[in-house]
Length: 114
Length: 111
View (cartoon, rainbow over the protein chains, first blue to last red):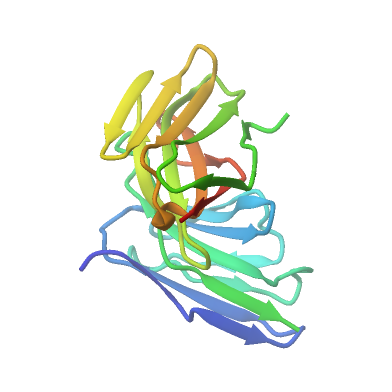
């Protein structure tokens, strides 16, 4: 059963703590992405990776970090430097550019920081 | 001006009505156009994927692209309560895989 998994579904943290969100895909896609979704703001790109061991900042990378050590995994760390971390986080994957560009999304992780 | 404009709604229609959604864009380099459906507290799922100008039909859904006007539409025929969701348009330049998203349009189909 191919797809993208994100865990956990809900995550609660205290302010000042770093937290890592998991994203795994078995679609054999080269590219992976992290988005943040806030009410009324649509999807905003945090980081993306087109190939293993390489990643680029998106539009709102400050306060976040990522790694891409394996093709199937792209974890996102929300650091204490992120001023407003409470949000719905979505991971996605796609084939390489030039092939079909549509992205497939995971179920999301809702992070609440208090 | 944002790259992709989408009126967030919400849009309420009676069951059986036709739902009409649209997005406008400013970047003439966009070549691929997508519509995603997102149920509450879930990830978006790809609904339609189009490349050229014209219409593409899939069951009750029709996606329309007018590149000359920089305008895309999604039509849902015979709408059902299960169609109640947020619909996001997305588009991308050729050879690039950074999607530009609209803000999403919330649709409520009333039984």
